[in-house]
Length: 492
Length: 68
Ligand code: SF4
Ligand code: SF4
Ligand code: SF4
Image (tube, rainbow over all chains, first blue to last red; front, side):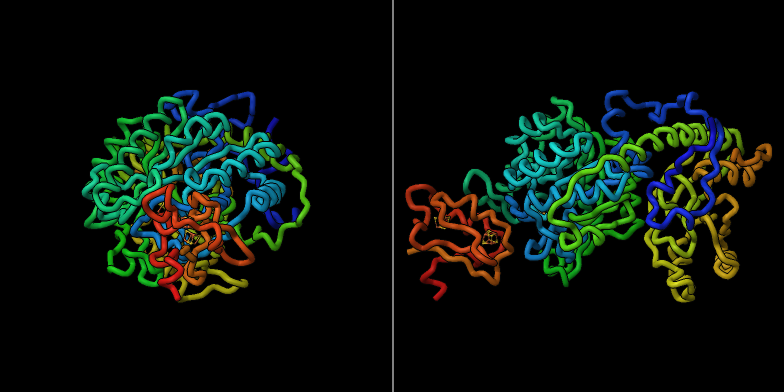
């Protein structure tokens, strides 16, 4: 059996079927009986089972699966200097954007509406604004009701950790197997510069005293979760001059205590957001500073590089927020869950992923066999691990690096969409070219002559020759071309 | 004496509601309000007023007299 009867594209597209481009070319071993595991070689089987459909935990899964957040827990038990709760939780969503605060009942309706429409949905999270473990009754009620309707949905939670030790037993009971703790320090002296106060056991603690309690509770929580086999991701906000160097220490400490992933996020600070840091002029890190720190942290707890610092009401694949399509006013008062779309999608994905894994390992062989060299590739994609977005429609590029070490995902660069209503904007193109600084090749499903030539003048080769191929397949072929191994035909 | 909430400052997070030992705070219409009949200023339960202690916005849960 080759060519899937149903393509991923037909299941997930928001356009009518007859407008779809030709179905993706399949590559390599097209038989599902080939049974290639997509599990990374150095990963435990049990852990893989937990993360393989979680877009935030698995870099591979983020091509196929989507998450949604519901903001049901607005109360918080600490104050962070990067947060002004008069507006939003700066920690878990873009600041300044007020999110819809939902009751558990509204959350249930919204999740069902999304599950019916977005077949990629696999994870439901409760994050900011507020603290999910502190505002626990609402979080718990929401989880219970949703898990009762949609049995296979994964539940996850994001928290500052202060109240977390008190919730671990219930989290285990409710099958929540992914927890994110924001840990910005392991030294209370530094903590005092980040947290003006905490509220614990019925009183407010300030300064170093407050930060010490928070620190101890965070470490305790992490140890408790690790002991119970709950996967824990640690988020840290990088604050230049305050905890940037210190995050190396944080990385070691959390790794020791079993953190599964460490995600270093840049501080977003803007006077208009009215946060303490915004008002005192504390700057956020530049992209190069962030990357330099991330590079130094390699080797500690595994780093996450595909994080999108999503809004508290984000819906969809990482990088493609469909939250605005699902605001409460667009959701009917009565709604029932229809599992059909999600089930079909999962079957098709299982097959696709086998193919993708084969294509990936073939590409890896090619890269390793070729000569010494490295280059950077920017990919326009809508998901599914393929080059399937038009240059003019892309709102971000996924950046990959190929070298004898392999093909690795480095980052994503947000851009202004070049083509709006069928016309390209020259000024936008300049911005895109600037964002592509350091990139050697752009891969997309389609690109016009004009932008292609402009990019060429700027030293970037753009091509649609690999449209609808797997990302790695194309990169492998390009790499072989450039670094002189036997010319290999693309496997597609 | 009682405490009251300055509605224009309030973020409606609701933390005060579940910390209040007297059940004096509830969401009414569009805002959180403190029932002056029920508010004990936390006397007998805690040393500090819990609503003011947990509130993220300074000067939002205040002694009613001071606000007039
Ligand atoms: S934990 Fe979240 S909601 Fe609470 S103060 Fe920090 S950023 Fe804001
Ligand atoms: S002062 Fe105490 S009793 Fe009065 S409203 Fe605030 S928390 Fe409740
Ligand atoms: S704690 Fe403060 S901000 Fe939150 S609901 Fe009560 S008064 Fe409003």
